[in-house]
Image (spheres, rainbow, N blue to C red):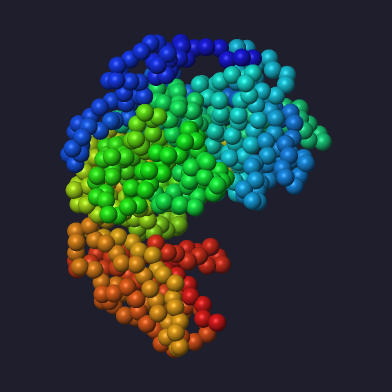
Length: 578
């Protein structure tokens, strides 16, 4: 069944027509407003006007945080892969990682139907369909190893749209006990100026597989999922942004130049699959603006403030950084964000993507939960990214980030967080206390659910306080590769940086165990970035460098070591002498 147009859809079509200029000619000033942008002059370090991101928030009007959608999916036909002519839905659910050599995930053909507790409903998506109207595939990275999978469902042309979506990203959040970290974050982002959000919906998924030797007779309940809007040209259009603009999703991107991979499409070296290992292309494939921006970010002869004012919206950048700190979304160093630039502008904007690892994910469940590295809080967390490293060496920019955090703390409050959580609780608590979700809950399981859920309320204030404390710490470094000459091993490391310009020293240690109880060498107070050790005999060693400032504040390296029992030791490297 084709999509039935809602009042919101008609409103959004009119907005889109305005964006694309289909309602007549416009003046230059009007042309600026049609990309969903507004002009602001309040950037204290900018001598020219900056253009703020201003999406059309009418798209959120029909979203209800306490709503539940029930979707029925019938598996009609198995897919295939390079090495398997038949790749079934059962095999998709048994997948624990990506296919080799970057091969695309197999898709199975499905009928997807919108329904209620009884079954598909008349007038809903796909009600009268007898043939496939969509494809289904596995989605996610680390969550592929979970027992309960997440899925991507792509509607075909005859299906139309669902909730202005062409793609449903159904996330199980298998490693996230509260099940609401993503939705909570994106609901908050709807309230934050100069930032976009993604629409989210709670979805109960029921699946019937007709491709097995004994086909299912009834739909099987797969439990609670969160649907997250797909960031693509359709997303840009319905949010009043520029569907012809550039939109990249960071996969492994540290604002370095990557000259052999990030090139124009007409360059002989261009390889789209290699390009997308760094930045996934979700918009225009004209990469000229991106490459110009990266050229200047990587040009250390240029003042970083001039580069930021030219190629970024400073307030948007600071807003993105501040929300990550308040939401404790640490896995945003080289991934889990997007870069957007309208077609008539040089400016780049940070857009959000994926928060299920935020809100103190490391602290969920019992007290013995896994430890996190001390550098993973605040500015230090981003020190490996060239843009942030250059930008926050300027104390004035740190002050601006502090001011932005205080500004957003008036929006991200304990009371508002509690209001969101109260609206989600009737839905989420029902599912986590029943099959199939209750048996696979992480972090101690259901007995910790309520305490974990309620713990979220106070986290932004806690994370803000932790942020201010970490500003005194030196920045993290990387340990280098040791070199051997004659009987001497030289150990190298990077120079650190201190935001307050305090004097720094380095304590070098090498040990025969990762707990550093069997020290071979221990040299505190070094000024340089290397140290010689003589006479290391055959065996396995562990070495580290602790950075200290003149006030006694410390920092560890980015490096870590994982033993055979998957215990992680932060701030060290292993070194084998043959």
